[in-house]
Length: 385
Ligand code: ADP
Image (cartoon, rainbow, N blue to C red):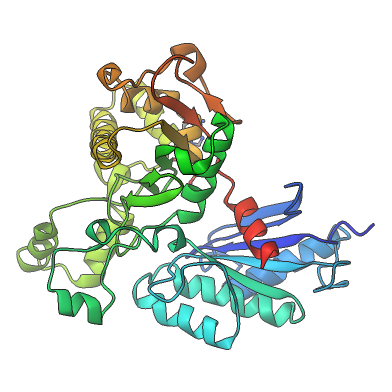
């Protein structure tokens, strides 16, 4: 049988990258996938060219994405990761002209991401006109955050008029991982209160009560919250004013400054966690400081969410850093025995690539590592529609 039959193509178009994966939503079996980076800086000038290249690559492997497309004998859907769903989208949505226009309109809230997402959608519709295209929004899981957690303490009328609220991101991952964690514990999702720490290049924390998100660290944009590879996370908003007023920086300059030249990179000149670790081993003081600021912020959110939830059943680590950096897991939770939080050094050692409990079996709080799989989650959502 044709390997494309029943499969979903998942596309994740970043500002300068395109991640793609062809997989079977039921079994999770990945037929083929890859990543095109530095779009715009290399011989791949835009997302259109990138996606054409992906199609050629599939064809070269004997995988014809158009063969039987839109029927059970071919590709059943294309699932697009879309970063910002704004107030318009709170669940996976089949894309038509109106939906695409709305995703574009939301670019003002996510200028780095939504335009790229929209381009990916446009090209995929053009190349695969018979296949259902589904948008899966990064903000959806947090759409129903309690008002107290979603509202900025700013002028209410202005906020309502311009949809200024805390939206949260990485929702697909937080939702997937929190469900998998409950499954792993053998308990219904509705009974588990947990803190999910998605620590990748971008990083976010969430508090999930019985399967529903009640708080999250990212806000109107993915800039708020934890210290990230190149993003500052929380700062005093007064800093922005100061950069403009006293240092004469323009708005776009400040945007680049906070989104691309801050975080670990801003403090230590390095945003990759492995490279940061190597610098720390060489005794680099700035790298050490960057790590300490990162851990300090992370612990602050853990503390806040423990209070939000009135105690957690589980604390779950995921994504590149969360799955691979044992010292981050250890340092984030050090000294919290009084809260029932203990990390077993042997269980915690090294990189973890399958669902694992890293706390002792009898500890009150289950500390888990659950590898995230946004592609699978998106493929399942897309296929389910
Ligand atoms: P994103 O999807 O946000 O780009 P990932 O979830 O892939 O990011 O995470 C990337 C981060 O994970 C990088 O900082 C990288 O250094 C870190 N990482 C990957 N492998 C390891 C490892 N073995 N040890 C420590 N950090 C790691």
